[in-house]
Length: 321
Image (cartoon, rainbow, N blue to C red; front, top):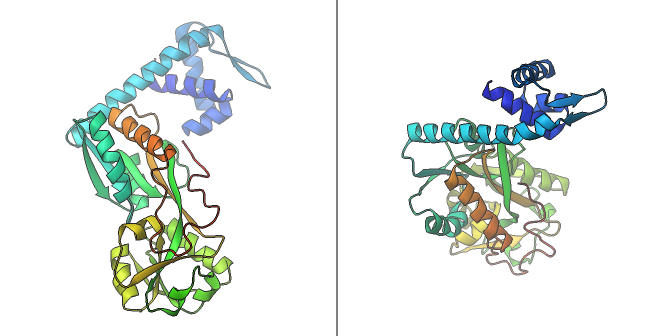
């Protein structure tokens, strides 16, 4: 009996469909059917009843599958332990975070994590969203904190917060006198945005929103972080675009922030981890984030926004994981 046979049987039991189970495991239906036939031969009884219309679990399958799940979980735990030991200190939790993300998360989560697992040493790693996802898949990272990501096989995610983009302007800029700024008012004005190669989703999302609302977009510069944006704004060279929490964390004399008129563009921020992990530090981190999120701890601040939070903004209107 092989571990992959157990994984295939579990996938079929969850999907109740050989084709869907094969797609989930990234193998052909013929391969998954053959491996389960071999497993059933070794057991001496069928695990599933197959008809042209449906797949059902047999009595033997009902007895076998819980033990199969425990075996697979134990194998993953052993693999995680070995790989973590090979990668570095066993008590290190490698946490990736994208540019301008992480400060609020670390301020809230790290103390709670230390209270629950004092032996764990958090190790923040600034990385682009794409690099984080690759590092998670290669097991070079334990947790990622990313801008919005598409679902990926083998990874789970949890929406931490959904927050609005805001405009950063020199206090002397003509638009600074407005309560909220219509995107069309940015037409032909130089703007500063995050580098697209660092966060394609973030760049495409905000530029798409501007163009959809009639803005003739003029990119003055692409930057890697808010720290590089603010001096350019202060010099009145351009208008910056960032997210509310990043702006709130970096007050800057002479720079003011203004919201967009409704509907405001929104940015999703998610934690991401490997599906099926048994690492207690990762599971504790995810649970702490979930608890803090449900308590409203990550609701974004609104620095120097005269109208306050945009009406009707729900920072957690959708969740995953």
